[in-house]
Image (tube, rainbow, N blue to C red):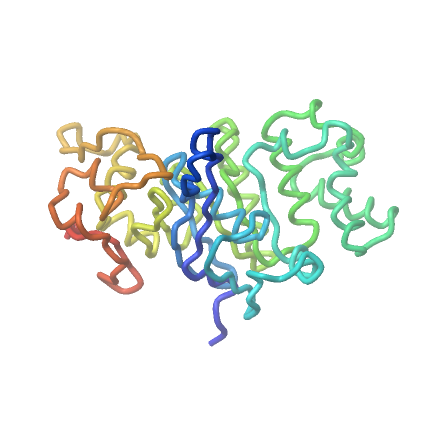
Length: 329
């Protein structure tokens, strides 16, 4: 069997906090925001891994670091057998066309001065894959492929002429025109009306089948992850606290935080008398994470062990891992 397309090992990304004048004079040590603090995972060819967690847990930073849009502080990123962690900009160039990103805000990621068609054709020109007229033809075909017809009219429009759902289709088209092998979809449906989300997810699924596309699908909504992902990784304060096959994680959650995320999803079928797990407070500051288990200040099952020792990811069933001293099983 061939290895995974992407393997991430102990990935870290720390952002230095700017010192004030007094701290500078005192030569106080530099403090860091530990946005991503030692995560590891693999993604096979054609697989979708959903990275799920609250805002501020480090999901977006993880996705951008994997693509080397942000330089990692430590760890390894191995893409198709090649360690790309420390490659130069020029050495990374061949990998850029194989690794793409769909940004969360489609309006902010599109130039307001560039026509929609030119924005889609631009990656082909940057990578030298087509001449201008040929790139235009490819862009027209891609506009039709993502459902923006008549494609000739959409080609000459600007981002402000389009709805949020249409802009998201443009961003997807721009990423897919290079026929990538791996895509980071960063909250790809979070800014779209609920009525449009299903069609965008279906579009991503169609590209997955056509290109055998691997995806790191970043979302705060575990219900969306259920629809699209083969596996789910739950992230909390820079750490992955649970990872496993989607059905297994959702039916048999082992970490209290995962259970809380599942119970936060509105459900008509769920019994009103069902006892919910009470999670209080906000996500702690990543510049000063709690000792031991990072979830213990909010966890109803926290013990002295949780406060003193950080749990490691342990396999509790086939390919299902959890980092918890008191798993829910």
